[in-house]
Structure formats: structure tokens, C-alpha cells
Image 1: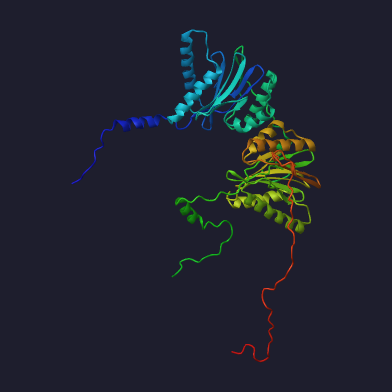
Image 2: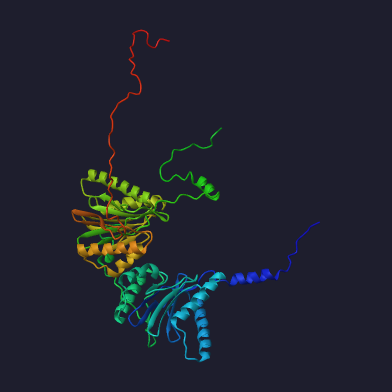
Length: 246
Length: 274
């Protein structure tokens, strides 16, 4: 006599299976580093416009720095779809806020706090938004620059960098940033960092935008490319002294 | 007991005999001891008259600093030096070995060693061990054909470059080089740039620290600047210094023999009989 067990219709297991497949497990379309600094009149943020799909450079026209309200700039590296979701959340937030119609507007500190809560809570549910966000802004004359990672680590600093920028741009910023940089000096510093990233980060592309936020408002530059230098004499004939080597 | 195969003596190369035992031990929960790694920043650059090599001086064993002031720039030949990153024993052993081979070669040929000779010897050795010898090297020197700078990876691949960095602090140091390197640097500019790159590694990478060592190699001349820069001095040093007041005094000298001296007299014919 054969016995067999009949699976009880456990609706839970079906639901759990559905939930499992909907958690973010790995990123698909990703943006590389963001570098941002405080300068004399506000905050400058630089990013390239590439969206990689694994090792393919799939999208070359993604704006990874967006204005939020009148006072803030949000830059994101990591999963692009999660960045778009975050922009949607922030849209809802600003809309709800506008409906009060009391002249108040969300400043960078408030938005940074909101994003920290969102990122941390998602991380606690094991369903993170796979981004590292950079929040910069100016309100009432005070500039603010902060960062939130996908696990909810959040802090404020005079200069921040995400992704590869952590390793390549941070040393340069630590050495050469100082308070009250002029706009030109700030842009030069950011371009220095972005150039090193262009040389040494495989997912960087030579098409970048620099965004500026001051008390007056937000300006996002047109995309442009950096000049690179390849004319070292050793590059022309690398094996001059070492025949057969490479 | 019969053996179905002949036990051949080991022909050389890595002996993998203990791998099965190690596997079994790790499965049972034993954590293998971590290697003394040099979690490092090492750099090299070519300037107008030759090559400048630089290195930090911290040797780590996991999260602990094992040696605060180790030497990572190894001597290969009077005109060739090599910086090493990775497992300290491996870099030490492999550079010592190739250094001896180069010396023997110099005796045989009667000429100065060339950098590509060192390069080929190192590369062959490391490739043969398929990356198990964990040595990442920056090899630089000036020989009859000019100044040369090479990087060698643990698996045996090499690069010939005008400026190079290796080790855990390589990205921090490379960002300084990519931003500031130009061709035809003078000696002082080159030393300054190398020191800056090493400092970038020391302050931005946790695996690197302590002091900056620099080695300048030009045609016919070399300068080994040990601890060229010490940007991490001891914060608090006792200003009074240390004085030990009382020395040990000798109170009495007396010699007491421990055992009696006994005279042995050999009588002929009786010794060693039964």
C-alpha cells in the first residue's frame, strides 16, 4: 500500500515565493561614480552619462543628476531603475508638500533625512534600493552636501564620491579641496577627478555633466567631454628596451 | 603489501600533497592562519635620468600591523631594485632568489645585469607557480639600454610602463600619478611626486602606512633613501626621556667549583678487557 503526502494548500508559501522573486538581488543597469564638492557659492556635482548593462555600455544619455525642488540636487550611482523610483517618491513628497501651500519648501537636510529613512527601511526588509545617493543643496545661504548608501549609511561632508570615486577621487579631494573654492577652481578640481576616473574605471565614459546649485537655483551643464593625454613616449613604443615583452 | 605504482621522487614545483588534508581540516572548522601580507602601496616612475621607486613601510597580518617599518624595496643588482607587494615571504624569497641568479650571471658574462633579465627570470618563476606565489612586483633599473620600469603580477604577466603602482593602495597612488605625471621630470620633481603618491596610499588606504621609502636609480649611480619621509611620528614622546638611575653593583666575587676534579690514570693492558 503506497502512502503519499498531500501538500496542504499553504497560501503563505505561494506568497513568499512571489515576494522572494521580487526582492532586489543584484543590479542590472548601473551608473558609475558621482563626485561632488562644496564650493564658495554652493555645491558642484559631476557625473558621466553612462548606463552599463553588466559589461556592455548600453545607455549613453542617462542624466544621473537631477534637481529636487528649488534647493537640492540628487545624484545617484548604482541601479538606474531604483534611482527613477526614488525620483518618483520625491515627486510625491514635494507634491504633497506643495498642497499645504504655506510657502515652505523642502531643504536639502530634510530630503537627505527622508532618503536615509527610505534606504534604511528598505535594507531592513532585505529589499534595498541599489543606489548610493549624493544630496547637495543650498537653503538660506547654507550649503549642504551629504551621501546615503544602499544599506542606509548616511553622513555629511565637504566632498563626497561614490563607487570607484571612493578609491580614485577621494585622495585627490582630500589633498586639494579647501573651503571657498571659486567656481572655476571647483570645476577644475572635479574635472581632475573625472579624468582619473575616465582613465582607470572601466565603466566610465567620456561624456559628463557638471551640475551647480546655489542660492539662486540649479544649473545643469550641457554634456561635454574631457581631453585625455596618450602621447607618452613609452606608449608609442612600450617594448623599446625589452624585446619580446609587452 | 604491494605497490602498483613506483614512488617517483618529487620533480620540483609545488607539492600539492597536503591539500586534501587541508580541505578536510577546513571542513571540520579549522581556520587557516592568515599570511603576513604587505597590504601595500608601491610605485615606480621614469624620470629624465632614470627610475624612482617608492614604497610604504607597513606589513599587516590580517587587521594587525605586524611590522611598522619593514623594507619593501629589495635589492636585485647594483643597478636594479624591486618593490614587492603581496605575501611578504613570497616577495622576499623570489627577489632574493633572482638576485642570486643575477649575480651568478654577472660573474659568468662579466657584464652589468639588464632589467629584462630580472624581468624574465621573475616572470618565468611566477608563471610556473600559477599564481600561488603571491608576489606583485614593481621592477625598475637603469642598464646599458636605458631606464626601464616594469610591473609583474602574481600569475606571471608583465607590463612596461612610464609610471606604475601596485598593492592595496595602488588606486590612491595611481590617482595622484594620473593627475600629475609628466614626461621629463627632474630628480626633485620625481621624488616629490613619488612621495606624494605613497603618502596618498598611506593616508587613504588602511593596508598601507608608516613611512615612505624611496630609491633613485640613475646611470651608474643609485640612492637608497630609507625612511625618506616619516609622516606618522609617535604622537606623545616623553620629553624627560628615560633614565635608569641605579646600575647593578658587583658586591662579591667568589668561585665555587661544582664538582671534584678526578684524575683518571690508564694502566696499560687492563683497559677495555671484558
